[in-house]
Length: 310
Image (cartoon, rainbow, N blue to C red):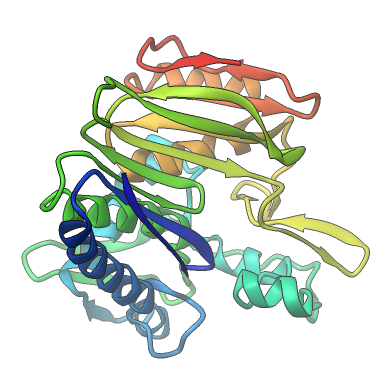
């Protein structure tokens, strides 16, 4: 299988295709161009991005590109399906916790201490966003600023895989914790994917035998930093505005769509054991695994679409 690796979206990107070198090279060029263009559209770390323009125009109707409108529509659907545990409007809380610049910069320079950082300002919930599909128009409440980092990354990975699939029957795109799989490697009827042990990234806690579709992992370990003396991570609990206090170090979800896998991995991790099982029962078709602080792999659902072995 041909592959190409590069850095984008503050993540390691891996493109894979079962195709000849010429076909694979063409597929990878097109997919990489799409990923890099999408990063420029969706990043909150550039004032020139479309997302930043949307945030600056909060309170007014904004004409969105087809891609941005699609991701916003998916986000609103998943906000309701996760009972608000996935909420892009937590951007002010992320910034208050020190995640005010890209993760690569946070790792290099450290997190910023926010003035009055301990104060949470009340605001409208994400469900207050208005959408007009006929014109691709969006209106955020005047006090809302959103971050689409995770769900956009999952959506981009799926679209990039579909681009590669024009050139290869079997292909995959991995973008940080988000992966989308199409077809199967020659001679196999599944993809073998290592499930990283969050306590030791050099080791696998288990191996997934995954079918076509999306696999996404959220972790409180990967995007973590110190803000003063406090340890912080990027998974904000919308109910408190603080990094989630959770028994899990990571949660992995397999779903038909990348946006589902990405958002439910976050929602299950924030929810914790009991609420995650209730949420899983309300959303059949997902398969979820959680790794706790002892390294134990816990199944959070009753689906049989995912096989796991040590």
